[in-house]
Amino acid sequence: MSEIRQAPIEGPGVWTGAELDAALAQVKDTPLEGISRDNFSLPVLSSRLTALLDDLRAGRGFALVRGFPGEGYAYADIERMYWGFCAHIGQGLTQSSDASFIHYVTDGKLHPSQGRRGVGFPRKLKLHTDLTDVVSLLCVRQAPDDPPSRTSSSLTLYNEILRRQPEALDRLYEGFEWDRMDEHGPGETPTTGYKVPIFSHKDGVISCQYNRNWINNAAERNGTPLTDDESEIFDLMDEISAENCLEFPFRTGDIQFCNNYTCFHGRAAHAVVDEEERKRVLMRIWLDTDDPRPFADEAVIRCGNSRHGQMGWTPAEMLSGANTKPRSRRADSAVAI
Image 1: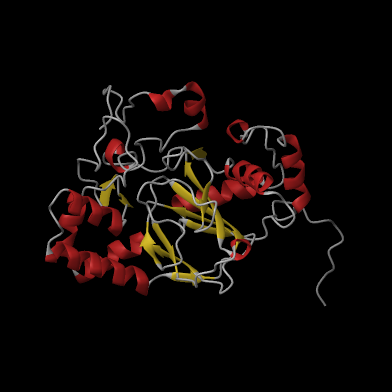
Image 2: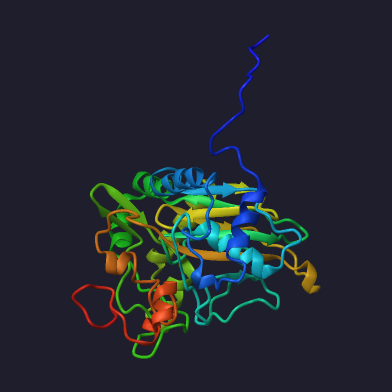
């Protein structure tokens, strides 16, 4: 018989939902923009969240947290707890034309204003990246038929393209314009106006950004549809990513995090539900992190897709009114690129 431990267990694995409740009580009357890791204290969980961030940056690039409290809480309180929790990972940003920090992924009444973006609809969501360092999704209520979520390594994709069709990498490094989906601001172009690399390289580190729909839309808007060769490369990328994806159940109280430079995310389709109280509801937060990785051109690769219109602003910038003025993505430029 093994020795019986006589001492209590300590460390980040020992925690209760009461810690989140206590943190919520501290910020119950605080506007979302005023909640930060400093006033949303998670003393027991903080070391675990630091390890999670390290894994997102330099490890698998994907993390799944289960058991986040939600049952019996008003949505406004779930938002505060979720925002405060994520503040220990990175800085939340606005992510739509209505300058929201918490984006509701649903086809119900909470569906936000978002230009031509098709977020929350029941159809299959192909593997793709979002427009910031890390994307986080909290399942508040899953659809009745329980569609699985999916994630796939874009670094594995790179290796497979290198093995199967290495000549395609030149075109992927060159990149493509992305559509801004009618969420650009005054004086900004409806597409990026410059090519954003799908794969880029700096100091031995590969980064990837890929959303086929947004690239296709830009090509169509500019009157230069993708060539057959380019479409075939994207077909190969989709095929490889699907072959190597991880499919997992995503249920109430689960939070997923994806590093958008190393991982794709998506999900299976689900059946249409008419009753509002049974519709699928996720909350989404976009996060910037400190020193995420080296970039060949940070203004284009990290900021080129995410900083336009009312997207990509921090709470401090919103409170200062910076979102009402032209912005620069380069230190030496007074206007947006």
